[in-house]
Image 1 (spheres, rainbow, N blue to C red):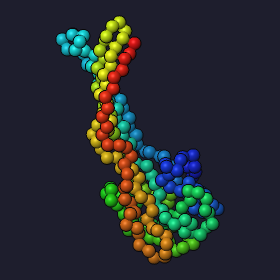
Image 2: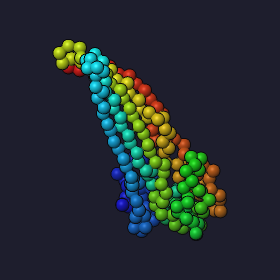
Image 3: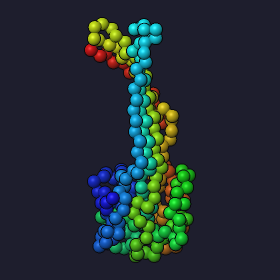
Length: 219
């Protein structure tokens, strides 16, 4: 856990780098933006024995890589700069809204790509005040990916080999969703309703299935 993630680039930001209230940085003590609670990674290689011990039918190899993880934390935010009027206008600083009383944090995430979280549980606090939503309050989508390759190693002469490769990335063609749109309110006027784009997932964290062929000479 930490209260400063400034070592990460802007493209990785899922919450404010600096605390909204510069006089109370401890109020932003929370889970780091790169905190992933569960990670599983495995790779395997299977060298297929030659059929009937015929060298010409051997040299086949199958490889696989599996990557699984839970989602990154992120902070719901207010789009306008310095709604709290704290005077903190440093880069990557943003305010957060209020969470309505009685909200169950375990029921905010819907899992719907159009509205990953329930924006109705938030309200825009009076201008000039800080919201009570904790930093990195919610979690984004998880990630699951499988890469496979089939390799044929053919001996040509001596130690020289010809290697043919068929590689398939994201074999299951799974759409791994990225962190959703975090801005809940525009922050243009008091008593405004939540933005229709709040919680929308607009991109994926990896590409669709890709297939490539390769040839190598090994000696």
